[in-house]
Amino acid sequence: MSHEDIYPGHCTKGHPEVFNIEAMPEQPTVTKPGHVSRAEIERYFKQGYLVVEDFFLPEELDPCLSAIEGVVDKVASALFRGGKIKDVHADLNVFQRLTELDKDFPGALILTHKDGVLPPAFADLWANPRLLNFMEQILGPCVYANPIWNVRPKGPSVVCPDGDIPWHQDAGYFDPASYATMIPVVWVPLLDTTTDNGCLQIVEGGHKNGMVCDHLNCFANTWHIMMDESKVEKTLGVNLEKNVKTLPIKKGSFIVFNNLVPHRSLPNKTNQIRWSLDLRYQKPGLPEGLYGELPTIALRDPATPNLKVDWSPYTKIRHLHQHMMTCGKEAPPPEMLDTTLTGPWMKQWPLVHGNRHTEAAGLVPLGQRA
Ligand SMILES: O=C(O)CCC(=O)C(=O)O
Ligand SMILES: [Fe+2]
Image (cartoon, rainbow, N blue to C red; front, top):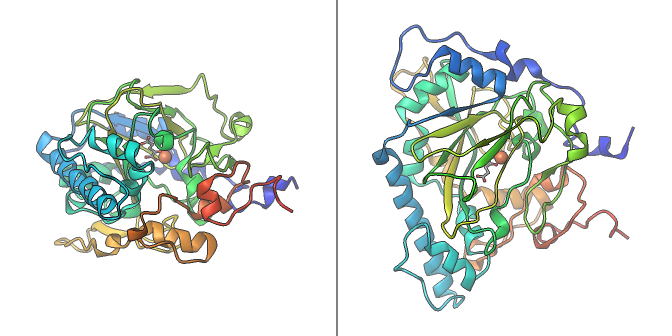
């Protein structure tokens, strides 16, 4: 047994049948708005991802940008009240303001990412009827929300490299009990994404073995995990150069991918914030990847035809719970404006690089242990 085998994240058995074409549900016989062709759904299961173009109307996305303005404003006001900044930069738009706040108070960007209270506009997009019709093609008639959602401010990499995300499988962040749950994510940018502003790259077919590759903690000065690139080819049977697809997509389009497909985003070389949402789904009754901390929420269920979605569980601040799960201590309350982010994934993989986030979790990197 090698030393990696003792890490809780290490995967010994793949579940290819959960992620590949044999998991494709029977396709609906009646076409509904939002449905794509059978060939496209087959592509999702074979490639592990699918780009769906021109899906959302501006009036479906713009409320999310207004909600983001609200989150940024909340952070700016809190920083101002706390004496951390002198200018709230109220004159700047949603793609510029947070960069200036982050220059004045490094980590402002992280505070918006950590906020964690689900705004109604995000919930509306998550339960968008056309999107749920589409999700039925991937999951079958029962579609539940998975509690791991994010709003991501990917700022200019030179100013705020915290948004730089290396190769990873989402499963690498999740409770290993969820390794046999397909948790598709719908990644929705709120502006056109390009190779210059941090579009996504995906490793096509990285899910075919149904395996989670070993990961390492933590990437640079961030809280992010990174794939152990030396093991990718052997574990997943894909190559991090040959099988990479670069996916610049326009506002209104989305990428859906499963929790085993390796992906990353390119550096943001512009001076605009690349705002995006990632919203996850799953079937009911399966592990959700968050150690049971927050429930899944029913969005579509034939057993309840007039389902009224109850979003209340997602108004709890997830990162506070994650901190407790990581180190057994209370996280600093939001008014402390703490810009560290911790989570149980930090203990799931070898800690080869420490930084202020791992320190906040009380973790000592390998090689520095007494
Ligand atoms: O938005 C990004 O840059 C990365 C997104 C990602 O890793 C995810 O949605 O799982
Ligand atoms: Fe991810």
